[in-house]
Structures are given as structure tokens and as C-alpha cells.
Length: 199
Image (cartoon, rainbow, N blue to C red; front, side):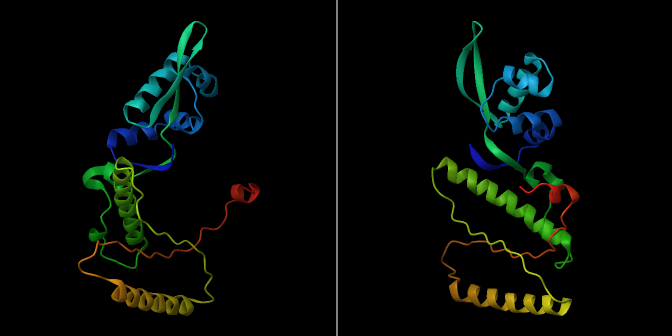
């Protein structure tokens, strides 16, 4: 099972976004069957099996074994990933495109870049999996508190200069291109629910 997978087919996205099927996917982080899931979601085994077959047809669930149960053979299935992201590619022509956002300092531009990362890295990861290779990536994630807007602007200037210097130093026109995206946004304030849940 993958930690994260990206859904880029519209029909698969629709299947995963159905509230009942999303519950089934979450429950199938551990192998289960239509019978074991029926009680959890309050449906008959037959109806759960229908939804499982739909998820399986879209590559979101796979069979991991069979076991005898009351004279029948019960299929055991699990989700193909512990969690999923939906790529903008699932929206077709309505998908995000950073080139269509005019304000490069806007939150919308950052969202469009994030969407492009989901689509591109999801596709590259799938190709690497097929070839049984590891995809070379780098991710940095940290928090910084700025004393003032002026401090934030100074940080942005210094970061930009450092990135330009590193890019100029390591860029080789004959090498394999890599995309570097740096984004900064305010950290969301905790919600009452997250404050109550220590996890």
C-alpha cells in the first residue's frame, strides 16, 4: 500500500469523492471484506460489495486474498493507498494552470503551483513505480514567525537572492531539468477541534 497516491482520472475522482466510498477507502487502510465493512457503514453486504467493485474498477481498491466464510469464499480487499490527492488533471480543461494567473504574488498563484506539483509529481511517481525506481525529489517544510511585514519582505529578498545564486551555480543546460518551487503562506490558526485532539 502506498502512503499517498494521486487520482487524475475524472471517473476515479468521482468514485473517491462519494461520501460512502470515501468512508470505505478510509476503512480499507486494513484489509477487509464486504461482510466486515457492512456493519461499519450500515449497508447490506451486497451493496457494500457493489461499491467495492466500483472502487476496484478505478484502481482504488485491490484484492489481497480470499478466505472461507460460512461455506463461501470471501474476498479480502484493501485500499491501494493510505490517503489520496486529486490532481487538477481530473478537471480537464478547468484544471489549474499557473500560466493563467496574472498576479504572481497572489494566493491563487501559489494554489495553482501546488496543483501543478500534485499533477506532475503524481505522474512521475506512478512512472517510477512502474519501472521499480525511486523518484529523486526534495521537500523542505518549516515554520518561521516574522516580527513585521518589513522583516517578511527582507526575508523574501534574501531567499530569492540565495535561490538565484544556487540555481546559477548548479544549473547545467545539458543536465536533467528539475522544478524548484518555493512558497510561503501564513500558518492556519488552530481550530477548536485540533486544540482538543493532541494527535
